[in-house]
Amino acid sequence: MQTSERRQQLGEALIVAAERAIEARGLSGLKARNLAQEVGCAVGANLRTLASFEALIEASRSSTRAAEGSGDPEAAVSDLIRLAQVYLKFASERRFLWRALFEHRMSGGTSPPAWYMKEQVRLFRYIEEPLRALQPGLTHEERALLARSLFSAVHGIVSLGLDEKLMVLPLNVLQEQTDRVVRALGRGLLTIPADRQGAGKRECRGDG
Amino acid sequence: MQTSERRQQLGEALIVAAERAIEARGLSGLKARNLAQEVGCAVGANLRTLASFEALIEASRSSTRAAEGSGDPEAAVSDLIRLAQVYLKFASERRFLWRALFEHRMSGGTSPPAWYMKEQVRLFRYIEEPLRALQPGLTHEERALLARSLFSAVHGIVSLGLDEKLMVLPLNVLQEQTDRVVRALGRGLLTIPADRQGAGKRECRGDG
Image (spheres, chains in turn blue, yellow):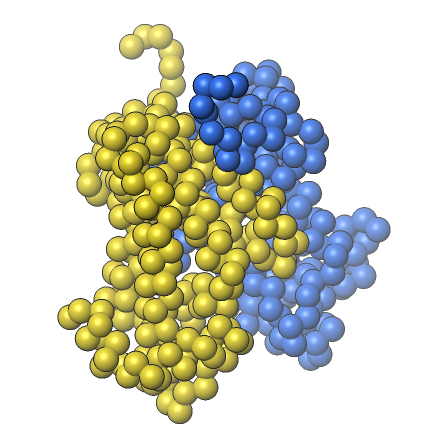
């Protein structure tokens, strides 16, 4: 089923209302009349959030389109940094909507449907593109897994950076830290062979 | 005030009971008779959790003590990987206690006291040590900030890796990914000068 059909099924108007409620007051701002409707609205609102995030990524691509597909590692590193900065911008500007994507214990402990999870994972393909230049030897599955890990690392920096628990960091500081860490990550990946020795348990003893 | 005095003040027995309740059922397992007591117990239990995590770090150090302070970048990278693996092990084995460290919306929205936040941040010094070898030009404040960012990146990998929302990854896969990402990060940091150009907005035009 297409995303658009799913949205129609859920009732576009209800979803837009849910999105507004989350944006204003977080997931707890949802006040649906029944559990199934609440889950449907939350999932629908999350789909809209993912779509607007994807639009931001696409918009940021145009300025660097020349570098894409060139296989140039420095261009790939810049690409990873751009994606991370778009994520940081989105999370900081639309905080409640972004948080709702990760708050999964909806009332009653209901989980979102499997196709919604796939929709989230689909966005990782933007990270896979630059990874081709940085780790050309990876299989498709290995690249997808590494893309997820890089996303998770950036998500950690963004979410703890915007978290009151550890003290919120000013946005320009977070931008600089994100830049530094992702640049290091990208460049460092070039030094790591794609084979499975990555586990790093192998000792160099010169008896090889 | 010493941590030990604080614990006495909070009532050691109550805290141990709180720790057990969290370990069994998460933060929601706490059933204190009043809000102040709940906050006190949760904070006390979190302090015990941090202390047992620190003990794990210290235990893992002994095997690599020779490498410490040598200023050797590869030893520093190994040190960062070891710390990340200890964190992953702790989070996966004591999931509820570890999650409670990051669940701050206690009932009524009460925040933990400032001295508790300091106690958390204090653990970042373990990351600062290897960073000295990888980014020797940083000031103390810059190093502390970067240590927080590296922690956040690893926390992101660990927490999304153990999260049902994105599909839980098997532990050996998470170990391998953590190894790969932290190794890349450590090696990549060596290629980035410590000055403020990190923001990466500077274009190389050869007119310099």
